[in-house]
Length: 70
Image 1 (cartoon, helix red, strand yellow):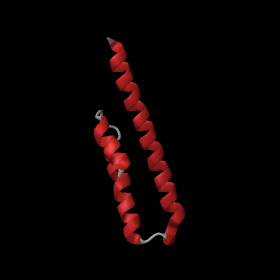
Image 2 (cartoon, rainbow, N blue to C red):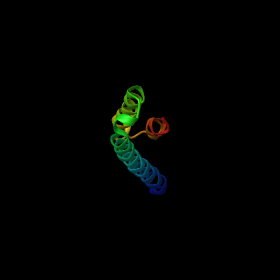
Image 3 (cartoon, one colour):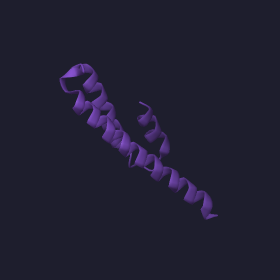
């Protein structure tokens, strides 16, 4: 009865943790790239990072996964 709910909660937590890691790594990579990356690329990546931040704490997995794929 609770096993299915526990499984879903575990998946949500793991996905959020993965999103947090992806955000951190992406921000660090952008910072390390500095002026080497074209401004348009940096703005695109920053927008995608923000989109992930905006959805990562929501209870639905699909928007989080889609933002992570982006």
